[in-house]
Length: 264
Image (tube, rainbow, N blue to C red; front, side, top):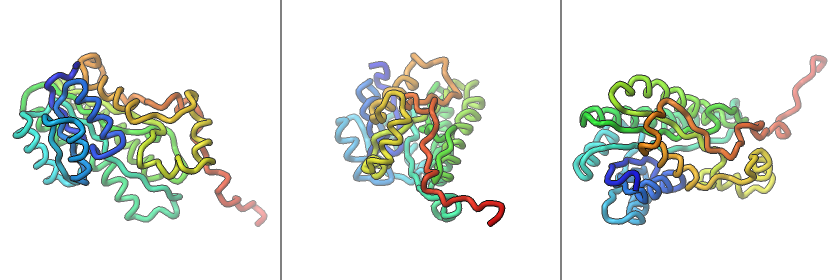
């Protein structure tokens, strides 16, 4: 019960890592505002947690919607002590095949959404005049390039740097800002990859601990970072990847067209 009676807002709470974070923080005593674009999914998460928790719906990149959500959290739960920005999407396409709509969709959720949410969360904490912590969900792709993931990698690298800048600016006001970088995690977003034996095997071969993360593995790190045990940690991205970032990132080189020679 390290987070007893503290108030947490979690985005992307309807499934995957977001839902697992809600469950872990609630198990540690926090009261949860579960936010998802899909209100029914957010309600399903909140119902799993019990009566002291609420469900909200908003687009994480919508300033007005997020501001309204923060007002509701303050009214219904009494303020904000912790925030976890877990909403994310991904598109798999080579750079030359990635459309502007695909790029903007990934950037809108994974980077602009983190900016909009973290800004609103920090403003709420500053208004309250008490310490707080913001945790952004990044990825090993913040530091490891993956073929076919130009938008996703760029957005997660942006989350890493945004976390650093926010931590610098907010530390004097008692607000810590940190990020968690999951590796391959068993979530709906990667279900197609996990259903492909060849692709899944290539990723597992790249993980020293020889298994994907479960959402609960990521949630455990988030709970630690939200607790007083992490009171001297800010501005860092902590990778929860089974050691995968020590290895090479799985390559799609075998699917690339052969490069033209100088004589062709």
